[in-house]
Length: 248
Image (cartoon, rainbow, N blue to C red; front, side):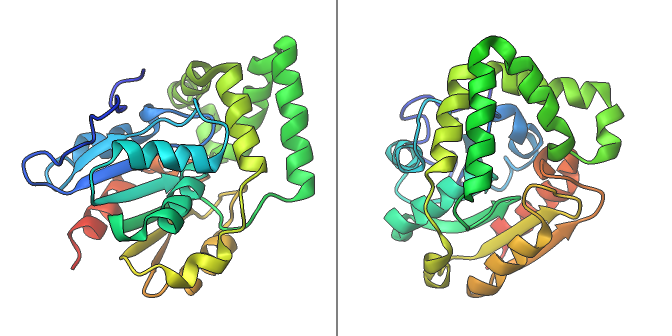
């Protein structure tokens, strides 16, 4: 288990009276995605990451979070983590105090995307996982970050820790996710919607769609940023989340 991730029941209570903040990573990433936020939001919240690669459906992932989280909490999810956050809102809206959706999408998977995912899983299971995850990098991060060897190593290390089986489970969960758009208008908690300007996988238009549908949602597009905003522009994301956590 990576540092900063939760163990069972470790999110069962808030620390020092601070609100609980559950952080949900994207696919196939782990707690290191949220390293900056965990380190710098501790003054205003009790941040904890719930890793999801041991479940093979969005519903099961949401169930895991709800079993570990305290009675009331804020939740932030990036990419697949956003799908899980929206499932949590469907299941237990009364438990969620605040919602942050980063570089994600309320729509279901398309047939084309699902086919591409299945092909990638098949290659990974044939011993070509390293090739698969490296091929994904240009769609995940801003072009200028591809030359940042330390950054690329950090992203790949997360993917390697998730591993082939975790990758396959998460892809299966994403393929079978439901359409979350019908429930967006029912969300009543303070909501922050964030994406990178250069996010290829879930571009700004998809975030505009979510923000327009969620009452009172705040939309922020971060410049010079791809799909992994929490890592690519960590200071900006942390500042936005601090404001979101403190806002009445």
